[in-house]
Length: 85
Image 1 (tube, rainbow, N blue to C red):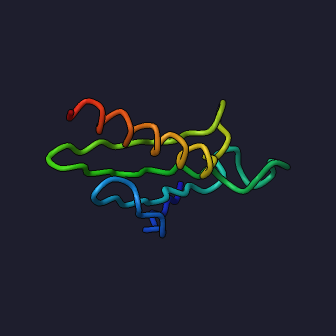
Image 2 (tube, rainbow, N blue to C red; image 1 turned 30 degrees about the horizontal axis):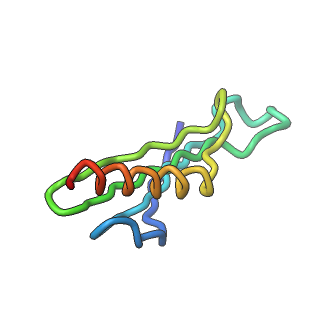
């Protein structure tokens, strides 16, 4: 099974952040009508000396939802800021 990683735009969380995509060929095989493979999104966020990593997986084998990862990233930044107070 082939997988590919790619750096995406999407910084702007905390002091620094990076977003990358993990894309895997269709795990069901080429005959699966849903097809297209799976996409996972991973974002690392740094705030001061604290680093957190968010790994987004879709529901029951579906691909990641970028808007969900962005919302979770905002919540993580808020939680870390509160913790650092």
